[in-house]
Length: 343
Image (cartoon, rainbow, N blue to C red; front, side, top):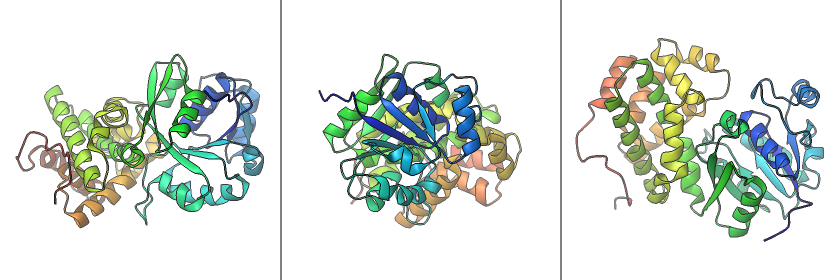
């Protein structure tokens, strides 16, 4: 196994997950710099060893460096994690490009889709920084639970086995397990799609539906995700793993999930703007719902849950009407879990 003793890592993005990733790497004994835009927040983290805005109450490792200078953060970095929302992904990739050497490994942690291109974050990295190898991290990874050293597992997805081994070494520990998967597209698409259904689950929770109904929502969400992804070329078996059903379960059941909290607020009668403002952090599922519904319409893919949520978010359909629409959609087979695209 390769020795990473003198390995340098940069984590771009000072949100909850970026901070948790950088802290794990520092705790494992590797040199890591957390880059963020705000000098005020950076100074606060340096002084208090706490990211009070995104991970309040959790002490950060003393060896984790913090910087707002992108060139400095990337100097000598051999592995770089991009942990920013999908809306700012391309702009950051363009900024980082001049400071990255050709042997650098890039890993996306974002779970979204670019609005105008329908490109996933790793595809943006390949387009903007073509001389580097690219991978994706995704799974049931609530940052606060990671910070609490709760046993957690994630997936590193790449066609490059050496890249997967590197990330497993940098992040793996007794409480954080890293599994490899070579279906990068499917893993990344699953991470984006599940945010739609987390909003649906939050709405259902606010409406105080029974456990039977929640089971229907979760199961049909998984089937709908796989149906869409297989049409776009993903491996359906990916959706039965950590990055599929695992991530879906966590985001559809935990109040720590931003998208679940948006749905909860909507179900309690708040407007979309009020719900997003109340959460206070980027909830990728709102934008993803719009993009996926429009793509599904273009491709003729049957997605009743996503379509009903779209009607609530963007067409002012009532919550109750949308929930009924989701539950009373056309009956066909059990869950219509797609194993191959239709000819």
